[in-house]
Amino acid sequence: MKWKQHDAEVKDALSFLSQIRFRAYIDQKTFAKPGNPFEPIPGMEQEFEEAGKTIQRVNVIRWELDTRLRRGRLIHSITSKTQNAIIYTLITIGFLGLIWTGLTIVGLYFDLKPLVLFIVMVAVAVGAEATDLIKTRKRRK
Image (cartoon, rainbow, N blue to C red; front, side, top):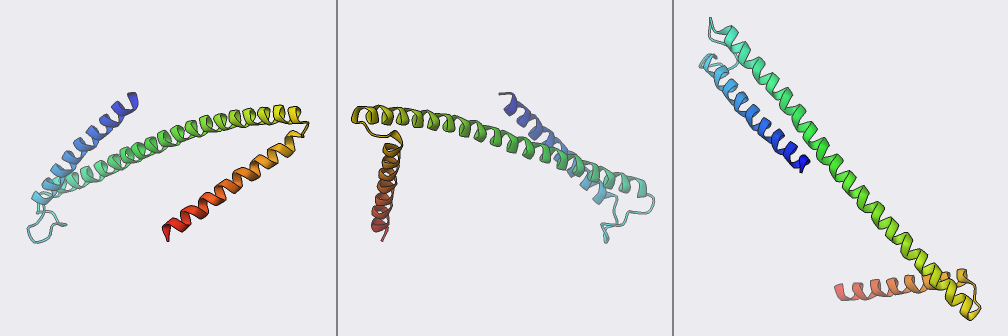
């Protein structure tokens, strides 16, 4: 919730800065010569330069806020993806432990080594995936 509130505040600040920049552009155009917008009207040099400085300042602040906003979003996406990856890894390790335990029990019951059973199960799984891939390729054609 706090993240969304901060995001909204930054967007509000960016829109306020856009208004300030727009007014500064209008001021700069007002104090510029009609034929040359990059040259001030004689006697209005100070106002023209202040409007230009305001535009530069606002651009720097907007760039900084945009950078922070993008950086925050990137960090948020990375942390959420990392959290999901850790959870999936732990679930996978748990399932592998259950499979290993089951293979050990089956091996003890039939007097087989669990590693051999595990290798056979991996081979069966790889074979099933390979046949599934072959079937889906035939459907595409």
